[in-house]
Amino acid sequence: MELSKLTKAGRKVLPLQKCGAVIVAAGSASRMGGIDKVMAALKGEPMIVRTVRAFQNCDAIKEIIIVTREDLIRPISGLCSKMDKVKAVVVGGSSRQESVGLGLNALSSDIQLAAIHDGARPLITDAVIDRTVRAAHSYGAAAPAIPVKDTIKVVKSGLVAETPDRAALQAVQTPQVFDFDLLRGALKKAEEEKAAVTDDCSAVERLGMSVKIVEGDERNLKVTTPLDLKIAELLLEEEQ
Image (cartoon, rainbow, N blue to C red):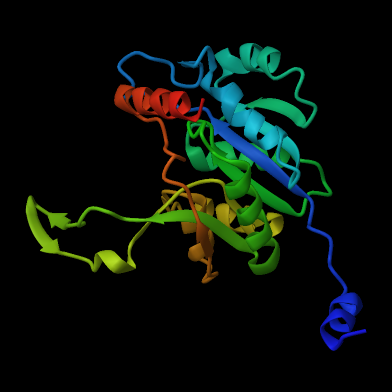
């Protein structure tokens, strides 16, 4: 047998750690002009259903917790009742950090990796989820990102203070995936120190932990405004 084949045969492939997903859909959708984006229709079905289904169909994800508003608990529970990976639909907190923490608390005790995803990113693909989970398995923390196209300006008091090198900038998406204990510890520390973090990576970075960046997807947009919703609909039509 060739040396390369012997080497491959002798390797011990470690099984992928058990990953649970926390899908955060507890926001007020204040920029949607009166549209409840979680339940907004995308090609005939609520946005949250498309988001959850992507994780339901991904082999790297073993269970799902949905965090939402109290008034949406029953509707979302009904919509996702046939998705066997959905373990619970729980009420979120007053902030995203709190909502993520409540979602983590609802995951099974044997979960080793936690994937945190925005409920308003319904076009997430199996490929992006899978490669982010696998990167987190190796590095402890990972997130998908895409290069920034526009020139970014740091503005202070209405004046340009700095122009960062665009080549070094990337727009981070979700899911952001972490070692479970690492993320819970990072969020707890941020809460104790009353530190406002804009995403889960920021909480982990505060501990000095590096986050592995993997290739994201331009189509994995976050629906924040009515225009975003129209773009998502057009992208779905293009797929079909």
